[in-house]
Length: 288
Image (tube, rainbow, N blue to C red):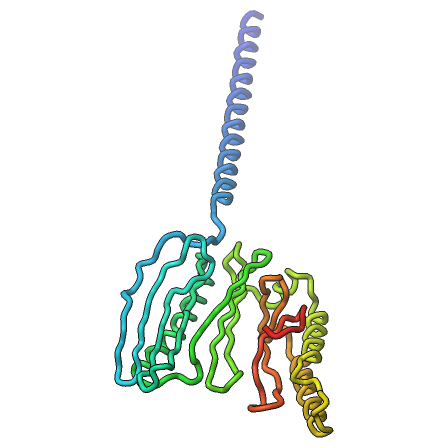
């Protein structure tokens, strides 16, 4: 009997040991999982969104290339603190056959660290460096790119970069537009841009057609005879049809300082060449 009691006590102690050990192992696993989860969360929280770079780049040396016909001066710069877009390369070209004629190129770079922005910056820089190099090699001005200026705007976390280059063809100019979501450093399409300002594709088209209707160049005045009135109406109708049938993803859109949607357009003109270009604020119906 006594032996049975002792045996029972031993068995009970063994069971208690197994249970206690199991509890200890379970608690260790729970604590480990919590720690891993904490580490993972910390890692996500500490991963920074794309922000302006504060680290200066090592810049190429400024240089002046004095050729037979053209004198080309190049100056490189780093951004100011937290500047989203800056002039990385400033180029001045003096036509020595006409000392009063100068071209200036302000070549921008977007100051956000992301893979997509890096590609855009390379595309911009390579394009205009090639234009400058070809002018230096040929010693002739490029009449299809007579300078470069830019503006940029920030609205609702969207950076819009608008680059304008005049050409020899009077009022005609080239325009490149990039819309970047600042928090991700990704280029966004027109659908997402319109979504940001709650404008549908139909609303956008209505705004474009209304703006075309309000262009002064298409309005008749007292000096217009019937043939001129008819010609203006014909040119306006051509422009309206062009943009009625152009898909939204093919339009050049951006947001300006007032958070208005603006567009770069090629419209049928009433003088000079068949078409001309302009940038229009679709909220105010005004030419920018």
